[in-house]
Image (cartoon, rainbow, N blue to C red; front, side, top):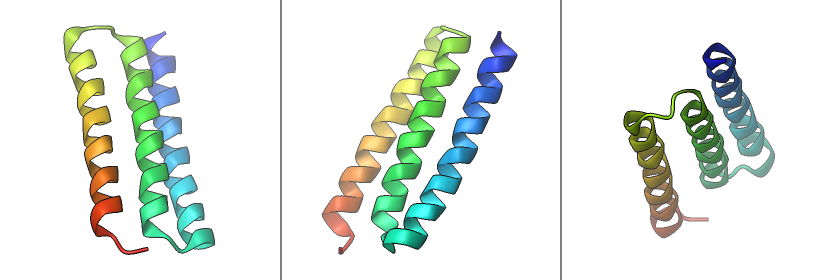
Length: 81
């Protein structure tokens, strides 16, 4: 089961990179592309939490969510449209 979860997290990360590239090409907005990428990375981190529900995995998922929130807030505060 954990191998399937790790593959799913890897595929989610890969799709996130592709989706961010598509958003960057279509919208010409690095801020929007970064937000999409961080959403996919958050999803991948939460998928990894399904595999091994330990305190370390929970702390890693919480850190991913916190970093995502900080980066997106920073992008919207400092990055021009």
